[in-house]
Length: 395
Image (cartoon, rainbow, N blue to C red; front, side, top):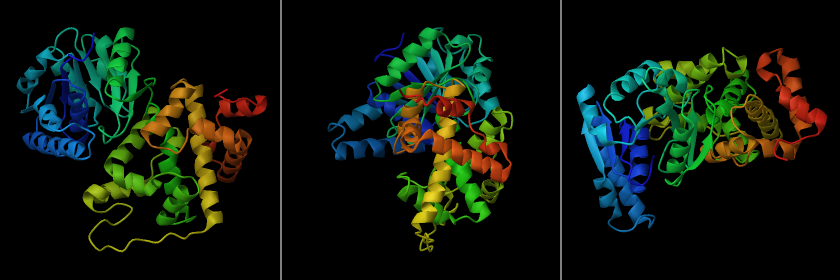
């Protein structure tokens, strides 16, 4: 169905769409990259050319392959159905437009009559329901999610997300093809946030909660989780890197998709940053100030405080990973791979929980739930069973 000769289409020439186009072209595919915004198309061409040139300079791409790879990408600009006609020869089209359900539905409805019957339609959404997107197509069985992580040429993970209607052979073919793009793939169920964006919510939400309560300042919480936990980036640094418009929107989407479960409740603190236009690195201000010569806050390097912060955060993360297995979001091995490859956690959360002891995780959550009286800290039923039976999900 899909092979090295498949023409790959990408709709949306922003950072993610351009990155996906680069990945597919580097793997040898002819690629069609389109965007209604001509400026976005021009910026994507420049960005991809620079990225490929760097790959040659660093010896990761043979000399001259930057030009030949770029030549495999057809850059298309323009609004309306006309600019989608170059996708007629594509065997796979990946949508990477704005993260709005109405926009994605409209695009797929417009695109489906243009492409061939055997063309697979994929969405790069990070949290929106695949079933709802595919339902607006005449043949929803060829629609699925293929969620790359930013920057797509660098991050090794891709979540493959079939909906209830996705045909089994479509899922298998897409997973196999993306695997040839030097990506590690995991299969996630069509649930809010899939694996990574569901399981990772406490890393952001609990950091903001501790800051709001005055347990520690922003720099100290980041320092604590990097020092005590070994995370590459602290939660505030990471939110600034992702962009608060994106991170907050994902939190909202998961919260609403999970019927307002308090475990995923968004923060007013982050909402105010979005409203103020303080979106992080890309706007120059977020939790940190990135303007030239801005003073950077110093962390309070208190080892005991760092352990408290880390212990609280890790308990919530492990609980969320275990609950994802309980609710059949993914298999245990895929949860482990997703969190190490998708967000660079220093180790898999299920293994981490086994290492520190699931009894300790359960006790920490029960203490937090008793202290706050909030369902936000409720232990997963599966965590209780594992502690009771002395079992591991990785055994």
